[in-house]
Every structure is written in C-alpha cells, then in structure tokens.
Length: 187
Image (tube, rainbow, N blue to C red; front, side, top):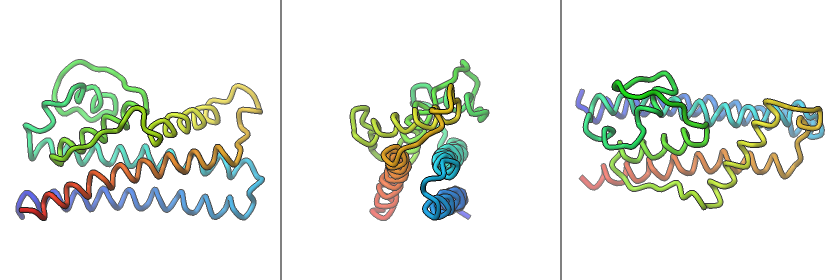
C-alpha cells in the first residue's frame, strides 16, 4: 500500500466519524420538528450540532497527526501547531503547552488541514460564515453554562444561526478537500 492509499484509508475513517455525527444532528432535527416548541429538543439540536463540529475537528486532528507522520515537513511550519495538538491531548512534538479557545482551535484545525493537503485556504476573520460561527458558539456556551432559566430558551433565529455555523464548518472542510482532490487529479 503506497502513501496515498494509506492517506485515503485514514481520510475514509475520518469521513465515517463525520457521517455518524452528522446523522445525530439530522435525527435530533427530525425529533425537534415534530415538537418545535419543546426547548429540550431545541437545546438538543444545538448540542448535537456542536458535538458534530467538535467531533469532526477532533477526527480531523487525528488525520493530521497521521499526515504529520507521513509528511513531517508540512506541519512544522504552522504557528502554534503544538498548542493545538497539545490542548486536545494529541502531542506531535514537544513544545510549550497552551490552550486555544474552541473557535480558535477550529480555525487552526482548518488551516492545518489546508497546509497538510498543500492547498490555499483562509478562514476570513471578517467573513459572514466565521462571524456567524462565533455567534453560534456563544449560543452553545449560553445553554451549556446557563446563568438563569432564560438562558435555556432558544429562538428560531438562534437555531438558524447554529445550523448556519454547522454548514459553514462543513463547507470549509469540503472546500479544502475538494481543492486537495483536484490537486491530486492534476498529477
């Protein structure tokens, strides 16, 4: 089995994790739509959406650890790569420890994936998708760490914001992988 075949195998495993977590979101959405006023299902869809993003990012980081072993020179150039991997318990090389915020870890993971795949990608700190992701993260944080009963309430607009955040993450991942596949097909 050559290096590209091994990378493809790990990529397929990462996609299986993505699929399972995305199915969770879909099932929670179906249940919520059957009783849209029940806050428990609204909160559940938010939690499932962010479990998808966090789980998918963790799976991606494992994929990147594998790529690091295969292509040792690619990830060394990334600023704070050690902080990202150390903060999630995946040590690539020794270095200073640090914790990144959830949004920063997602951003760094996408940038690391693009670097490992040798394609251009920018999160765009002022893009609508990124700004929406930050706002949706605040919604998730609010219901996860409520300071009052009102913090547990979710509006339709907030659910849309969370759905758009998950879509942004998927679109970002797909953009990077599509560029990677196109580059591989050029060879």
